[in-house]
Amino acid sequence: SSIAISKAKVVLRGAGPSTVLKRIFNVLTPNGVLACSASNCILRDMRIDGNKTSYTSSENRAIYASQSAENILIREIVCDASYNGIALSGMSGARIIGCTVRTTSARGILISGASGILLDENLISGNGGHGIVVDGTEDIRILNNAISSTVDYGIAIDAESKRGMISGNTCDQPQDNQSVMIHGSAFVVTGNVVGSISLGSGSKSNIVAHNILTSEDVSDTGTDNTVEGNKVVKEEATA
Image (cartoon, rainbow, N blue to C red; front, side, top):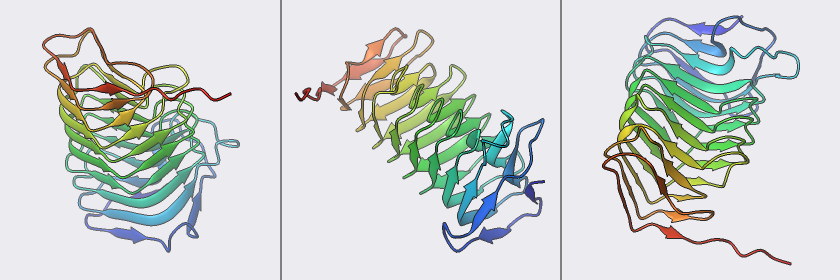
């Protein structure tokens, strides 16, 4: 079963990537190899092997923190080969900093129904779905993350999410979709180097400014969005 943390202010710290937690079970509801349901906890300095070849449930996560996990800090954890990487649901004040999420079957980082979230300096690569997914979340900062080789969107913001900053990120052009897709409202997207940015039909009152785009220009089918000062710099093909 999971390593379950249900007491506040617990610090679980490994010795770096040499400390390995490996999945040896499937779940029927969302759960992680590490599962936290308590406030003000710190999880850091270890590696989680999701063992997705043997354990294929779509509910498997490397780390899962639920609504009671206010102000959790997840720092410098490597998550490899899980169905989904890190999932936060329903809490406020969570921080994911300096983590590596690689080769998931689906999403790298999933944030749902949360508020006041920080994602900073994470490396997300080789995921079978989206890199970062934000659903029904308010006041999120997505800063200085490096996203590469995803199949679907690098960063995907749904229509129920509002107020956020997306800045300083890099993301190549995903296999099937845009680097950044925003359906929400009142996001500021600036200072990123990404393949493409799309403002969907439900998006409203967003600012997309001073980004470098390496594949295509900004697409805007929303309402009252501001798009200015972005630059398309396509890489030249080599013989």
